[in-house]
Each structure stands twice: as C-alpha cells, then as structure tokens.
Image (tube, rainbow, N blue to C red; front, side):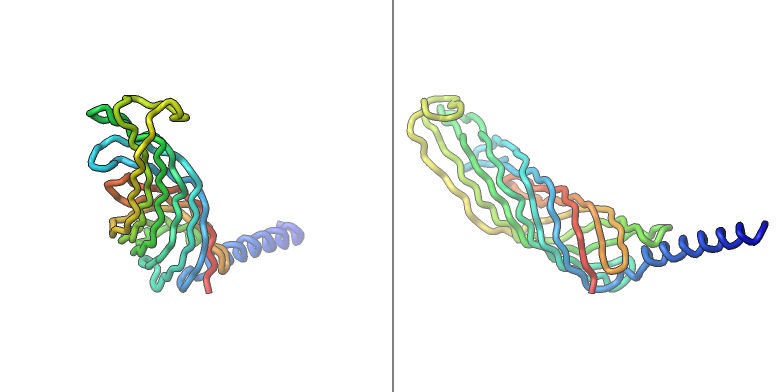
Length: 210
C-alpha cells in the first residue's frame, strides 16, 4: 500500500466513525415534538343501532416525552384525528342515519418500550396507555323514507343527534425511528379503542431532545 492510498483509507475510516458517532448520540433525555399524517375515523355505533362508516382525513399531534433508560420511556401527546364523514346505514322501522360527521380528539399517556437493536441510531418501539378521548359525533335521522342518498334534498326533514363526551379508553401503537444529535425522526401507527369507532392514525414525527 503506497502512502496516498494509506491516507485516503484513513480519512475514509475517520469519516465513517464520525458519522456513526453523530448518529449514535445519546438518545436518553426529555424531548418535545410534533407529527402529521393520515387518519381513519368514523362511527360504528349510532343511538343504540349498529352500522358504521369510516373515512380518511389528516391527523396532527403534539408530543412530550422522556426516555430515562435505553429500553423504557414515557410519552404524553395531544392528537386530533380530523373529521370523518359518511352514512351510518339503514336500520329497521324505515329510519336511515346519514350525513354523519365524527371528529375525535384525545390526550394520551403512553408507556414506551424499545427493542434492543444492533445499530445505535435505530429505534423500534411499541407503546400502550390510556387515552382521554373526546367523541364529537353528529348524525341525522331520516324517518320513514328508507334509503336517502346525498344530497338528502329529496328526504323528509331529519332529526339531528349529537354525542359530545369524554371517555377513558385503551390506546396502543408501534413505530420505528432514528436520531441524529438532538433531533429524532420516526414513523408510527396508533389507535384508540372505542365503541363509537376506533380512531387511528399513521404519522411521521420530528422531535427535539434537550
């Protein structure tokens, strides 16, 4: 090996080591962040009758968390799942529930578990916890006419029903992420279990550790 080849190899090795060290900066500490992505919201229950619809919208959230040890952390977030629109379906006695809107939001507290990984800059994790879920749902009951297609102008005057309440529900999720210096980037899926439809979201998130 001549001298120029030796120095080129040395510089290349030093660059790889420096980049790996930067990626492997200590991920432990307190962090804040935000995320945005796609959601699936709707309703599977209306005024005692089962039917349902699901719709896609945009979700966003704010995050604050702590990772005191490598494999365990905790996280709190506020998530807005966006609004879903649809028809809940036809029920007996000539009633049809249509033109429904659901807009779930939640404050969630998670315990987070991280898998041990062979590379220092990669995180694979799962989380489970409790959500304080706001169910804000409005649906319209059209009576005696059977199916009532949009734009509902040919139907009898509807009766509006609204559910606006807070409940404590089980929440869970999983994701994968990476970090560089004080910044983290991750993609994750999460869902809240609810009889009024299970709002879920797939989001991409950025965090800053301090």
